[in-house]
Length: 168
Image (cartoon, rainbow, N blue to C red; front, top):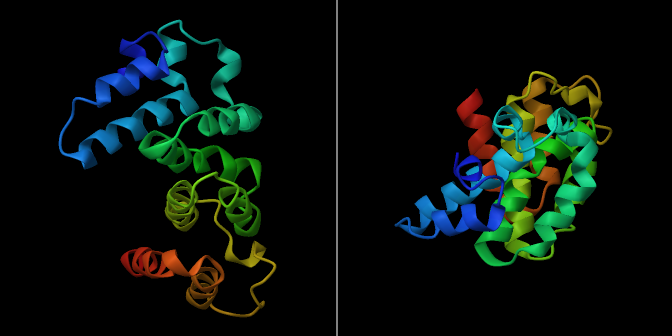
């Protein structure tokens, strides 16, 4: 709601987040600002955006440019939320989505993007492990998800496997 409160001014909304402690709460607030920017539903309801903003997949390029304007934890928060758009734009293809995340200007931003992508992919109703070209057909879904976790950057493989176990 910070973005609505600041009449769709992202920088002002991030300033509101800056007063929160500890740092984790500030980061969650920044995530919310960028998620609200991506979904735009509250902004549309309050007259700050037009109905054309309802489909964020058409705005992926614009959202990526926005994320590239920020540095530090604000950039990490922006890149953490952009997978909500990227997974739909890239039709839940993990290779394309992770390749997109890897274009983030900072390693921490790319990691946030990849980690959030894992959660989205594993919990999405549209998630179809058979669609992953690098996974052999005939394997169980559990084997395919294990294969997904093995194909992502090594520094987040453990996170992927923890998410998978929580869904078992």
